[in-house]
Amino acid sequence: MKNVIKLDIKNFMGIKQVEMTAQGVNVIHGQNNQSKTSIIKAINFAIYGDSDKNLVRMGTDEADVMIELGDVSIRRRLNSAERQILDVRCGKEKIKKPQEYLDKQFSLTAFNPIEILDPKKRNEYILKTIDVRITKEELAQQLEEHPDHLPELKYDKHALLVLDEAHDFYYKTRARANKDALEKKNRYEVYRADNPKQDLPIPPDRADIQRAIDQCDIQMDLVRGEIKSIESMEEERAKNSEHRRLAQEKLDGFRNAIKHYQAQKAPAGTVHQEKLAALKVEYDKAVAEEMVRYKEVITAIDAEIKTLEARTLDGEKYLSDLDQKQPIEVPDKSALHEKLATIQAGRVVAEAKFKELDAYEAVQKTEKIIADMAREQAVAEEMAAILTRKVDALAGPIKRELMSKVEMPVPGLEYNEGTFFIDGVSVDNLSTSRAMKFAIRLAQKLSGPTKIICIDGSEALDAATREEFFNEIKDDGFLYFFTVVGDAVPLEHVNNFEMKDGALVGHEPELSSSPQ
Image (cartoon, rainbow, N blue to C red; front, side, top):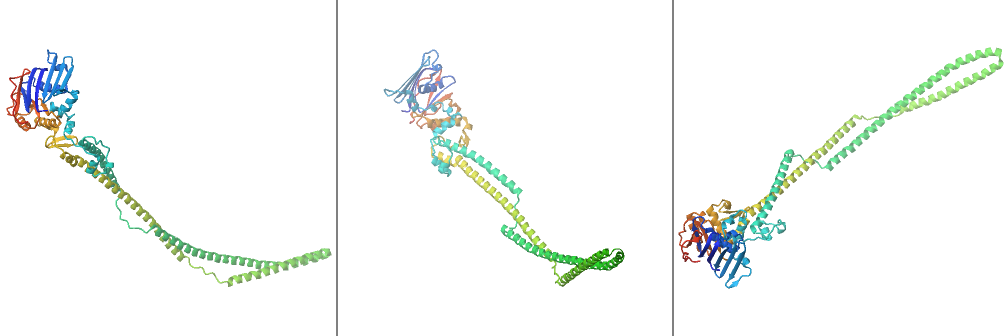
């Protein structure tokens, strides 16, 4: 398609009929409500269609718009019954699927590009002008990560959206990692404060302590054995003394018994003789019997005396034997008790070593717990730092490198956290004139093969800015339609068309000879 357009508009909105040929930069100017915008809407209608019956000029039955663009002709009609008829021809050949054909040749953003900056659609349009993709492997390489360790992302999307999604994932993951690192840091500091570091001497080994205790027990058993032996000797000596005392008492008893019987022996004879004398007178027989009893008594007493004398001799011999025995020498136990007390004290000291060892091991266990906490804190902080590097890389270097590989629609365009900036200024905060210029640049990038751009309300650009911009675009190969409220634009390469009362004023101007 050549960059020259012929328009034939009939009964469209406020236009009765307008015929014009345009190329390069075209300005449709005039006062308000003169149907300037209707020309742009007519072009849009011819390409994309609209069944709104209000587009048909009041008092007529049909709106008819025809466009000739090189060897392509487009004609679309709309009647008051909201029925459209579209006819598209390339040369003499009629296009079978006319709307599908037009959609490929034109871009909807070419009509009033300012709508591109609608916050709901802006990023989508801008991203379309920056054709860049990133694969899972490329992202993994940029992040210095194994591809299998990356989050699940939709890599068929625009690279910047993939980076945004990755950035959001790592940002949230970092937030959790920072929280985890802070919790571990606080736990470590609290535990460290509650358990100050103690430099305790290293106690003996538990086995050495037990051996010392066992040695003390052996020594105490030996000493206790010696003490028990002495106590046995003391008991034996006491027992011997008691035996001698009892033997002496028996011997003394035997001696006293002998004396008693001897004392009884003489009186007994006297008594019996007196009785015998008396009985002799009375009873001879009784005397004889008494004599028999007397002899028996005497005999019994003599036998008892003899027995006691024999036992006395035995007792005297027993005492003599006891007296002749070597007296038992019993050692002094006090030294052994002192020794035992010393050993017992040593054992107490050894047992105290166990407590020292328990305390030392408890401190070592606590220090290990604290060291583990410190390591966990360090690991968590390192993880948070790694994630921070990924977040920063995704927000900065990786995006810049990607965007450096493609041509930007405007110089200074940057993308950060879902927002586009131009020279550091958010697109939301661009001035009206700068926003319009930006929108037009985007429309250029998004335009179809026909390279047509229509801008309504370009008076938003001040005269100096507009002149500068018109000079910038004069040789860029696009065909522009600008509407301006007011006078013509006094630039040699600009084609001015004045609209008044829905018609062109005067004859169609001669096209500029600027190279296209």
